[in-house]
Image 1 (cartoon, rainbow, N blue to C red):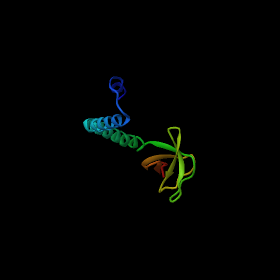
Image 2 (cartoon, rainbow, N blue to C red; image 1 turned 90 degrees about the vertical axis):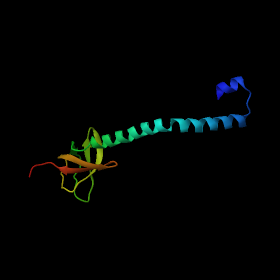
Image 3 (tube, rainbow, N blue to C red; image 1 turned 180 degrees about the horizontal axis):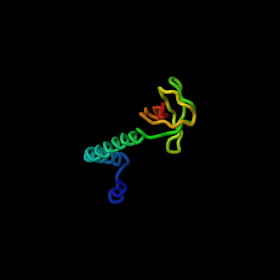
Image 4 (cartoon, helix red, strand yellow; image 1 turned 45 degrees about the vertical axis):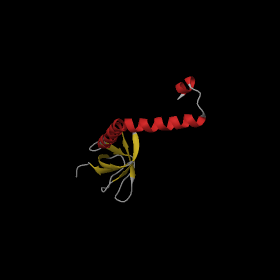
Length: 110
């Protein structure tokens, strides 16, 4: 728009109309390309979630059924829930996640 205004004297209304038309045209022309990029990012987040599954974390607090606790995984503290009774300092396996809550199970041998 700025380059066009250098050569042609346009009113603000004309500039807005040209901007809107060019914006809509750009979106329509690049829609397929943008969809491919956004779709790849969606799959990348699914892969990121799978990065947790099966990994070992360490319980920072006690965790019991119905009471969440905290685990340390890759140097970060995460909220965790479990159906097992887990003691502080115990190693646990991550079996799932929901947003920022990790679901873990005890890996100590009975």
